[in-house]
Length: 194
Image (tube, rainbow, N blue to C red; front, side, top):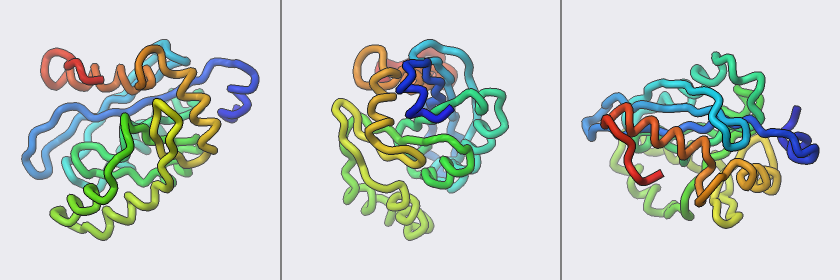
């Protein structure tokens, strides 16, 4: 069932949130990626994968993790903690939504400084390719307290879903849990920024 219809009927939203864990600064270092599945704000399952720091495989890895999981048929929305994993391993948001067949949104805590991001890309390999991925994600929408980019659904519908998926604070519960788990696995304990 489509996300807008689920919200209209007041049914539970099944969401999968993905975040990266702490990683070393070495070029090409392995970066853990944790996926948490929630029904509204209640934990239901988890996925685990890896990408390379500043690489190009984030979209492929998320498609592999989510697309090959038992959870995909139940998921109404996929949320990413930002558009990049492991530094600047950028996700192709429209390709991800199309490949999974569900809306995908990259959620930020605050409005990103796109000019600074574009400058930072200049110091990495294939900056033009990275810039295309950054721009391809589309417009940034502000629906306080969230800032997000979305593919596969309208921003008003996603804003309504985010309100349902956030228990306390400004971070949807699936992203908060993914952050805490990824940090705990990598560091031995979760950190406080979630």
